[in-house]
Picture 1 (cartoon, one colour):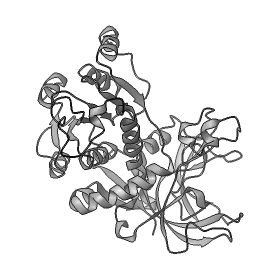
Picture 2 (cartoon, rainbow, N blue to C red):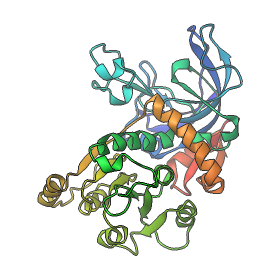
Picture 3 (cartoon, rainbow, N blue to C red):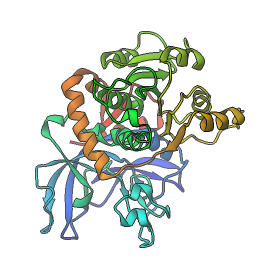
Picture 4 (cartoon, rainbow, N blue to C red):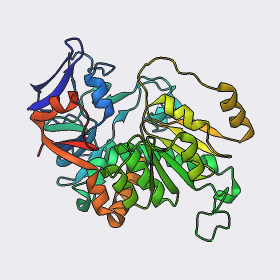
Length: 373
């Protein structure tokens, strides 16, 4: 069967013939891959910044944002059945029994770093016709979400982040009542969010924040009446462009910034924005920057504000099953509220043969999807 693979030692990305997998365990499930989303991680792998083939293989099949159909199941499978649409998780636990995170089913918090990730680290991905995996990693998607379900995995980033934000902000008793009757929803109510970046992860994060009741501002590079700004306004959020608003001007327009959801991987603007983070606020990093020249930071100011303003900064990566389930539910909510906006996130669908060029070419639009069915 055809697949898109990267050969790190040859520094090559190409269409290959890849063996069709078979079910070899009682809990195995065979899937027909329908769609795979392309993201920045895939582009970094084909740029040979990282990406590790499975042991004994010279290549890695790419793709980790998947949507597939169940076509065959092992005799012990109970969670899925043939015909189901599923999104499969990316990370698999490490083999070390002393890793408390993986032993608890939370490989997203793995201590050892010896986890595997489909399409990224030591496990083939989904840019191929068929895959086999264990039922425990599969999440069933309602048929009504068929045309947008490939957005599930990038949305899980926001879902995990929001879960942790809620846990952190339980320290503030006035944030626990999230109803409209909460008398503290104005200044100091903990409900003003800034999303840094207007890519797929940022825009999906903005939708999740708006749905959760945050007054949401998306702060991104470009200005003017372009699609991203219009999309942001269509979901009830505000769009401010770095071309027309400095970080200080943006902060003045927002007021006390209670939450920053970073979705760019750009360290310079991220740390500049940290300078205007509000009192009792949380800053969430989701991007992984490449190595660039050092930047100057006012570390005294950042440290002073972290202490005197009770701020919290954390990073988040990968996601557990709960985040996938929440993402599927929220995609349903988004489609009820903003169906046109959600569909506009997918700006191009292309055949498998076009994937190498798309992966190595200049990024255009918002989300590019490879169609295999």
